[in-house]
Every structure is written in C-alpha cells, then in structure tokens.
Length: 142
Image 1 (cartoon, rainbow, N blue to C red):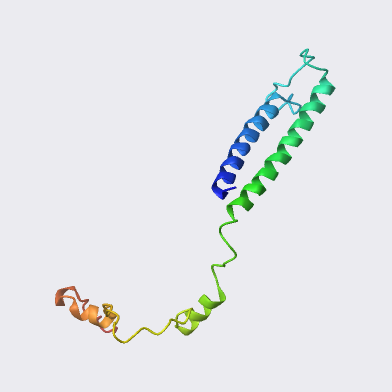
Image 2 (cartoon, one colour):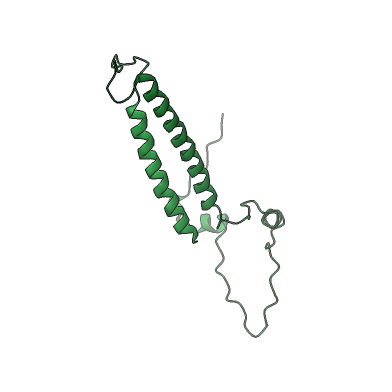
C-alpha cells in the first residue's frame, strides 16, 4: 500500500471518529450545571443510568480510537523520512573543520570547473561606497 494512500485513509478515519466523538459528547447529559441547562428526567430513550453507561463507553472507545489513529498517522507520516538526523555526525565534522562532509572523487584535468564569483569583503564594500555615505569620524570626548 502506498504511504500517501495510507495517510489519506487514516485522515478520513480520523475525521469520521472526530465527528462521531463530537456527536456522542453532545448527546451526553450535562451533570455539572455550568449554565443551568442540565438534562432532567427520562427522555424515553433509555433509563438515565443505561444511557449514561452506554454513552460513556462509546465516548471512551471513540477516544481510544482517536488516539490510536493519531499515533498511526504519525508513524505513517514518518515512514518515508528515514533515519537521517538533522545534526548528522558527518555534517557537524564538516562544519567544525570546514571541509565537505563526503570526500569528492577526483575530477579529470581536461574539464576545469568554472570559477565561482567571489563575494566582496567588508573592506572592499566600504571602499566602494561614495564618500558622502561614509560616517564622519567621531569627535574626541573632552
């Protein structure tokens, strides 16, 4: 199975679980009285205890399925990434030494590499500025 297809399937399943979890949570009776809108009496659907137990179990199952799907989606997203690290031992060594990470093969002398344009140094850049743009020397402190 293709990794992109697996991720798409997991995303669709995650969306369905999220919508179902939201619906089940909204069906539950409020017990906290946060806004004074707690459900009262028997609605005729089930007994209060039976409905509470069923919705609690369904919520727990959907919550567990949500977490399992999230973990599976994370694993599926990291399959192609490989085991290379951003801070690779070769890369750190090349930064510290200033040499390339992988030794390059010798190129034949018949095909010289084109010369790369060199960047201007700070002194050359300051010298190329017009005289009016250069700052005036600071006055000596008294």
